[in-house]
Length: 234
Image (cartoon, helix red, strand yellow):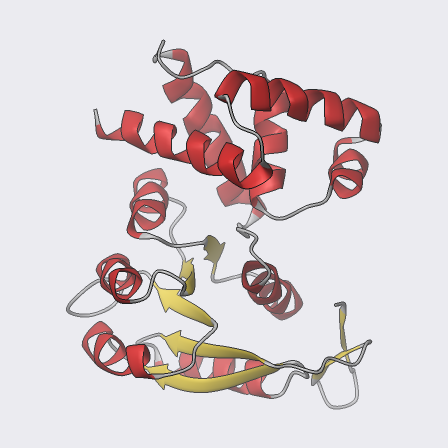
C-alpha cells in the first residue's frame, strides 16, 4: 500500500483499494498532538482511529475491551510511563502491536521499550506519510523504526556482541540485514537498499541462520534481539 498526499485538501489517500481498515488507538498526553494524529489517521483511507487516551491508566482500563490492531504510544506519559503501559497491555493481550513515539533518541529507552513488548520505535518528527506506512508495516508483522533509531540499535548491538562470547558474532553487513529483516523487508527490497544482489542477501541470511541456529526470519530476529537484550541486563 502506497500513500500520497493530496495537495488540495491535505488528506492522505491510498492508491489501491483496501477492503479492511487498520484500527488504531492513540495514547498521548499532548492534546494538540493527539488531535492531529486522530485527524490524520481517520482521514486516511485504510485506517481508522477508534480511540484516543491522554494517560496510561485510562488506556490500560479501556483498550483490552476494544478491537485494536495498532497502538501509537507516547513514551513520556504522566503517571505510568508509556513503557510501563506497553508492558501491562502486552501482558493482557500479547497480540497487540505497539509503536512507541518519542522525541528522545536514547538507547536505554529504546531497549526498555523493546523489552516491554513494543514492535516499533519512531521519533515524533516522523513525517505523516512515513507514520502511516509504519502503522501498516507493524500491522503486517514488521518492526518499523526511524532510521536514526535503527542505526542506534545496530551500533548498540555491535558493542554488546563484541563483548559477549556467548552471542554469535555477526558481520556488520549481517547486522544490517537483521535490522532490515526485523522491519519486514523482502529479500529484493533489502538487496536494493544495500546495493547488493539478491543472491548475496540470500547468502548472508544463510550465514545468519547458521550462526544463530535458526530456520526462519522470525526466529532469527527474535533470537538475536532476545540475546542482545539479555546481554543488556548483565
